[in-house]
Length: 339
Ligand code: SER
Image (cartoon, rainbow, N blue to C red; front, side):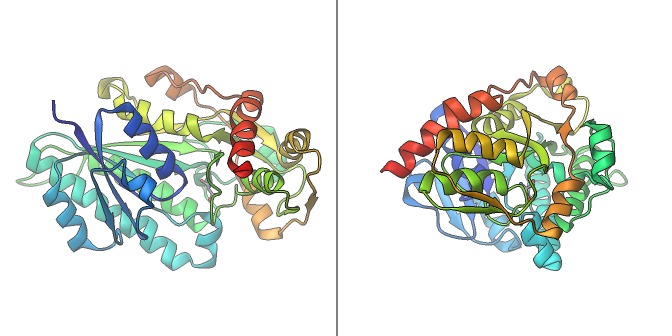
């Protein structure tokens, strides 16, 4: 049987790296990758085709769609939350207009093939906005429909694109001659901060977690940009990739919503620091909180209620905090920087 073609945008990024590796190992998919910069040769080997270009480029997108019978899109390309605050207009262009361009291509492809192209979209805890740490502590685990008042451009962009995806799935061109053509099938995950043993994120505000760990492993000192008590949910990268693949494979009839929280563990900066120091006793970690980045982290929930994902498609993370550090992050990072 021919393999299903999967298009991955932002393919050189943190999630892209791990996802390509996973889909290659899975063997059911032919991966077409797209990123602003050329794919590193290790990733290119696992892809059927690799394109270098901008998701805003309509001509390039149409060309990719014409060359490949795309069954699913993982639209990972985005400017993260800190980067987005430095250039909000650019963040809007990339995160919203870029996503709209991909939705347009996936919709056209669905209409042309007569079946829904699946559209997997990583959203974020950044769509939430708690007004202060007192409220944050009081509300604890948050449900999808609560506190949808983001304080960053990135959070606004993700929240709006979730709505765009739901619109394209259920209501696109509801009036007129095209009302009955196949619509795309949008599925979104609200990820917590992600921690990978292989890569360090750039431009995010949950980056203090991974930065702390990778700095210690490299023997570098680290000044954390949030205070010791700053707490948000985190997830190990293998679980994040599992969640994406599970949601891709999930039976559409079982999905009661287009947007799902997914959680794994919730830790404060000082709890991460303690684990990092236990693994790397020489680690030098200090705190130099940046007021704006701290405020952003304080607006994100302490934890998420992911019961809908557990109920609808069997979400069940493999890595709690203990296993994440002891069995995945620390051993893999040690190996990584030893070579
Ligand atoms: N990790 C992202 C960021 O920090 C949040 O989704 O911007």
